[in-house]
Length: 310
Image 1 (tube, helix red, strand yellow):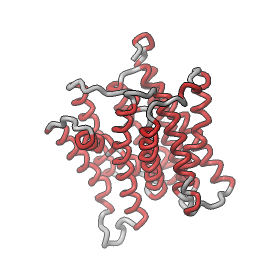
Image 2 (cartoon, rainbow, N blue to C red):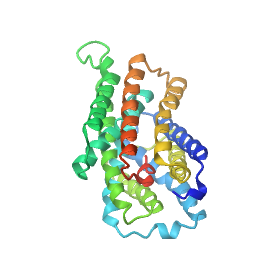
Image 3 (tube, rainbow, N blue to C red):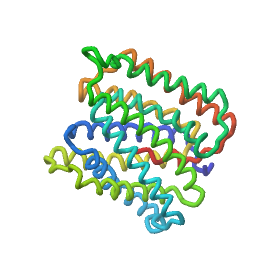
């Protein structure tokens, strides 16, 4: 990081604002309605996010150079994995209470440890494996009250698929992070950001023959807004890491449970129970501990890894 622009307070503020925008984006998707094809939602999110991203790159004087890449296939793989993660995440948001979907999504850093060990051969010692195990126990606690599948009040089929979708989304996001770690060896952050949005729009557009429907104006407006808000959130997240280190900013990711609880209650009547909050606390604690161990062991962590959250 350029020490001449170091400003941790500003970086933290931008991070928290980006999280608020991402939760707003998810709320807009949920408000648009459950009958919309996931691929259609993903297209609106990806395509309309390009508008603020390209305007941002233009005013930074980086729009032209951002299209230059030395690794087009790397962007292809990263885009395919990332858009799959995004689509599964949106499916989960539509079919689960918002706080629950957000809390289960906290499993991503846990999957990242597994992906780093399996795909990159990273040395993961017992402390981090213990944190991963504890984190997954937290995920089970979050969904446990509804796992009475054969009793009244158990998970509905849509909720079961929603939980599975969010978990798979978190796992794919972790794999995408591994690809980003490889991309940053040859690519700049603006290039990775731009090609991810472009590839996501193209991949999601290819799902058009598989069930897209004509949208009412209200749903279309919400999805267009979700795209713009998601793009702005991506910019703020990218910028936040210019002003503070990853170890300073990353824990503020977990403020999303506050925003998710607020929007979930006032927009959808979803109020998290004590079990969800307890499980979320365990998952958050595991994620913070993993970050702490990474910092102590001085494992190189690229800021770019953190800038591409859907």
